Amino acid sequence: MVLTPDFSEPLARLLGTDGDDNDTLTVQQVNSSPGGVLAFSGNDTINGSSVNDLIFGGRGEDDLLGNGGNDTLFGHKDTDFFDGGSGDDVLRGGKGTDLLVGGEGNDTLIGDAGVGIYQGGLGSDLYVFRTDLAGIEEDLSAISSIFPLIPNSVELPNAIITDFNSAEDIIGLTGGMTKANLIFEDFNSLTEFGINTNLILPFVSDELDLLAKAGISVQDLDPNDDGILEGTSIRMSGTNQLLGYVLNTEFSEIAALPESQFISVDF
Image 1 (cartoon, rainbow, N blue to C red):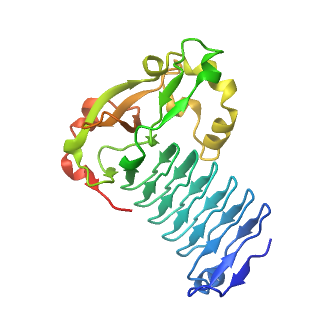
Image 2 (cartoon, rainbow, N blue to C red):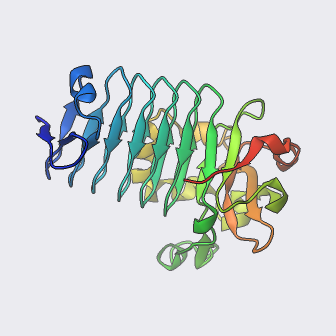
């Protein structure tokens, strides 16, 4: 599919279509379109170039791939997959469940409404928790009718970090919050949700397909292979609202991090 140049805005940009686009950007296209690439409706795949790309996803389930350069990728609605590739990338999820993969480099991963799944990859990555989106609850009554031990509703994390490296990664907090405003606790999915996760795998095939795009397996999330996800939950001390989970970590490990690894951010 050919992207269409658009000069109606102060900065020239490239426009996709309302169909399922599959485009690979050239360096020449990127350099001549400082306003970036705007994908519209459809399940689009946009492959970035070797330089700094600016890509905006539209409605639909999009795959936005930065490849080389310091890229900035924006989601919109629905379930999207982001892969920054090499370079220091900024990935911003949209509404819905998104998978944000930083790749090599010092990347910034930011979610939106819905659950953001973060895999930073190599480098010192900044994982942002949106304090303004904490405390959202999901109705599980349809599932709890099948599995009675599951609660009728559950508090959703704003983000789930799958590969936090305590030696170099950083947690970002919006709303002016700092480490002093947080509560760290053990997270155990069996205790939290009342069911072994292996039992619900047949019902979450779409989510598993999303993880597979980044090469993330169930075993990566559950290295003990016991059907229980474990890690650290992070809550806001004033409201006790859930911000997110840091998988496969001890809460004492995250709580012991210096204040310099928790920074206030404004996006």
